[in-house]
Amino acid sequence: MLRTVVVVGTLLLGVGAVAAQQDQVAKTQLAMKSNGKNAGALSAMLKGEKPYDQATVDAALAALEDVAVKFPTLFPESIKGLKPEGDYYASPKVWTDRAGFEAHAVSFAKAVTEAKGKIKDLDTLKARLSTIGKECGGCHETYRVKNS
Ligand code: HEC
Image (cartoon, rainbow, N blue to C red; front, side, top):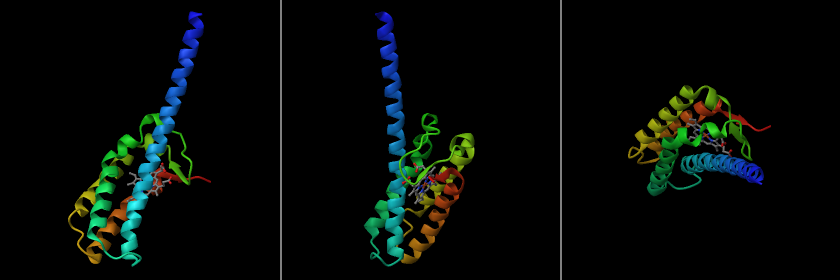
């Protein structure tokens, strides 16, 4: 009897841990999608699809910064090797080359923070977004993998 309780308890713990991991994978992916959405809002203005709007710029930068400072905590050891639904997943290098990954996160956060308050019109937006965009691409090149 006691043994059964222990076994069932252990199984439940296992299920809870897996659910928590999947939860984290989903949260991480949501944060990554938020990056895409906010960068997209900025580039829509550059492409002339939307008029320049200071409130949108400021909100997008704040949201990007929010993800940027959380980057390392969004990829804990517990989700290593787990793949979210969708087009992309994190390369194992996020964990095997942790120092490199975190360095990219820091320089991304720096580019975003430095842009805050500096974007005033389309010209300044263009210059800053190009710097930020290079940070996105630079990290993806090594640490993001396309689902095939
Ligand atoms: C420090 C590394 C790093 C930086 C900087 C970074 N990303 Fe990512 N990004 C990742 C990783 C790793 C993934 C794959 C994990 C995932 O999709 O859950 C990812 C996934 C994505 C995805 C795919 C989400 C999906 O649907 O699966 C988008 C879109 C994205 N990033 C946009 C951006 C944009 C835009 C920027 C810059 C504003 C950016 N990222 C900056 C590491 C980074």
